[in-house]
Each structure stands twice: as C-alpha cells, then as structure tokens.
Amino acid sequence: MNTNYTLNTLGFTEKFKQEALKYPAFYPGRVIEQNRNQYTVATQSGEVKAEVSGKYRFEASASLDFPVVGDFVLLDRETDSTGRTQIQRCLLRHSALIRKAAGEAHERQLMAANIDKVLICMSLNEDFNLRRAERYLTLV
Image (cartoon, rainbow, N blue to C red):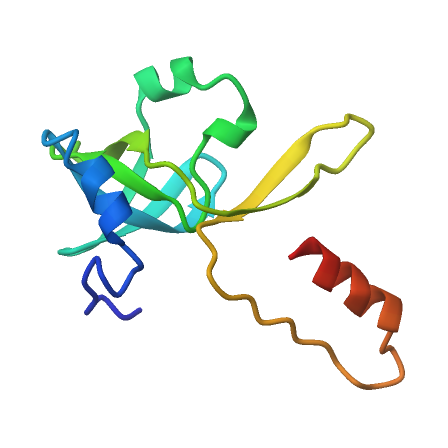
C-alpha cells in the first residue's frame, strides 16, 4: 500500500486543520480501513492501527457517532505494546454516504464520510438494470 502521502493529499483542508489545532495533544489522520471496531488510519508518517478510546465509546450516543472510512480523526500520541493507538476525536464531517441499515429496525448506517467524488461502475452485460443505476445515483 502507498504510504507516501501528506495530509493535504488525503484531503486535509484548511477547515479540518483549524479544527484539529484546537486539540494540540493529538495528531490528525484519515480513516482508510475499518473492520468492526478496528481502524487503519493514514497519517503524515504512515499508516497506524487504531481503535476508539474508552471515553469516545462512552460518549458516543449512536452508531453514526463512530468513525468510518473517510473520516478525519485525532489520534493519541501514545501507542500500546502492539503499536496500536487510540482515536480520541472525530473531526466534523462535510459529507456522508448513509443508507438504511439491514434488518427491521429503522436505523441509518454510515458507509463513508467526507466524499468529494463518486465513481459508479456497472457491467453492461445481460444483467444490466437501469433501475439499479438510478438507485445508485439516488444514493449519492
């Protein structure tokens, strides 16, 4: 995986920078992978494995409060013995891709955040369905 990136190439705009400056004890990164409650975060110095802190987990009132791919987060400068760090804050999102969660409950599921561009790709074989393409376009 490419680890030669800067925060600017990750989309860290002036707005995010100003918000991050309010918390000098932490350093910023962007969530690039999520596997349940484990995250891979791209930072100025490379990728780190992270999980949300206990305080963050306690203060989160809904699943939409947790980080997802695309979120800019603030990380603790300390790491544990396995090299993992903790996500202390999630910076405000400027956009989000949300769908209805699976099942009977009327919950929303956050799929990705801070999206600027979307590429929709579909096969043009006999399985092509114009209604499906319309649903995808409506989603974004």
